[in-house]
Length: 325
Image (tube, rainbow, N blue to C red):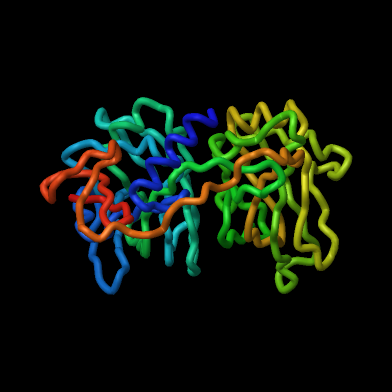
């Protein structure tokens, strides 16, 4: 594993690219959607849904290889309904990965984790942001891929970050869903710990609770069984801002297979992290690479081959990666 990682590091150094690269997907030219209209101005992609479950979308005539990445992020500026979804498909039209989201009026990252070893990830054809009903409006300020990197035990991995008001009606549409892929890096032998960061809605709620549910079978986590009440909820004290759960082997296996749904009352979630608690002093966290850009303007594909401006796909030029369409 270390030899492979060293080889990847050497390739990155050759092109002057940072260890964890973010590759932007352009927001102009999103013309592959259905039951929707799109416009692009001042750096914002705006989509209006004109038919039930319509979507704004972009795609590529030549399928793209995303196997160097493990996360797609769509940055929302606003959305006005209780359900939406980001997903992408392979060349056969099969969904590879997806992540739902809910209404927001603040900048929110919708992160779609995926397994870069899947064969379908080598032939990504279409990316979509889907709405729910006629009149829904979604505003997007950025879409990008994040390159896969090694993580070190003891360092929190951010599973989700943004703002999700769980409300005061136990509304299922206001829950936070963390897909099974979010837990791929959790290690059973490292006592993985979940940390929930939140603020309490003191203006609209007289008490505050969190409920952690296995997605699909609707059972709750057992790791914190001694911490919850008869309704399977954790009662949060006034002025609390964090809550932690150390996962047992049974819960971890279920989370890796099905994912986690977080429900609550009077709680506004801000972030969820995962930490493999036992630290290995010899573990690799980051790799030092040269940040000095190339100055000759030459373009290369991900295999390190020089290409010209007619090449379609991810290219590296002057130390930066981007999609050449």
